[in-house]
Image: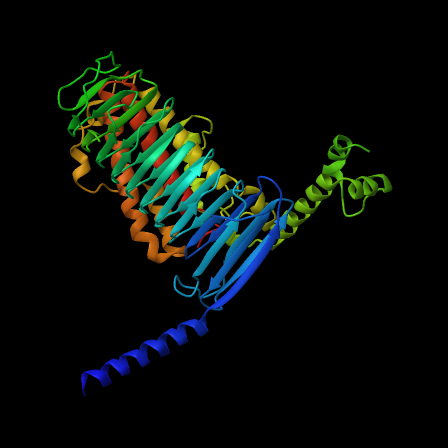
Length: 282
Length: 210
């Protein structure tokens, strides 16, 4: 069989598979009229949820169902919208999968749950809760809201958050914060690594803590911080010339450092039990 | 009739309403929404099966915690393992509450213990020694894994690994805090470790997910 024939057969097989897959899915679109600061909750057993802002005071939920082993239920009371995947008997992660694309007003508070994820939220100015044991979580371009994220081993990326209150808890997922600042930024991880790249804002409380995961914080020379770093069993490194200050614990070379930079506007705690900590200059 | 007056009579409301109550419900969307929500909850509660009741480990954990606190003294607290279906929905709040209670109890128990002398066999080994190997799990953890295995078998290994990590963190944090009870950072490790454990329990018992 010549190469052209094989390529043609391969293409036909792919087309058949794509057509078969398309025939197996069902698309459902739901529209809700809401008011200011609406509350939108999406609970999805298996599959991604993506939330973006849209014009007007409307919530549009598009759901792609992968089999008849799952249904999408909805409720709308006042300005509360709830949509959830209802698994039927015999549903598996494959057949129970639903892909959600959600458009909400930019000021809508959202709550997203999915075991597998991924979970994605962008360009909102509101509070949000994202939970998923293994879900990859990606939050970007949000402001003026409380961002709460919980995962077991799903990696978390938060990018470009201003004036936020960020709470992240993960057991073994890595957490990356890029240009994130606000009044409170707390990350509590176990074996996952924490990476922070930003300027720590001008009046925030930053706490990045792990058990065994490494912590790397990258800041510019102009950062205005009061920093405490400590690893009980790991090593700490610091690239900045800090003004020394008193700490509640006895300093030990190589495993702790503390001091201030600039006007020390923000408080920064980098704490690990056995992970390595590095405060890097950008 | 005002909303306040209506809320006062709400607990006694049956299927029928007085003319005054009907008039208020027609004119007040907040109260009519409230009544609709309560009716929906009541209807759903009737549909709940025994399987929706908190699992036996919750009862066992509460019993152990209460006995350790000296709040109960009987060797065996008799509790129905399968409470009547009508009570089931009312008790579901106990699942997260019990998880939070256990975490708070653990922290309190530890904080009380730091000021007291300990017997030799209870002295912890050097900090960090135990983290290298896997430790046997406590009964509550095993019960939780059993529950996870029944509900979502594919997730059991993931939960087991995460519980092992969290337990190792708790052990290290406790040892660190024991070595210096006034160390704020050690207390912070401990709070964080227990917060992680609460999260694992919360996720495992979240009934909105499989």
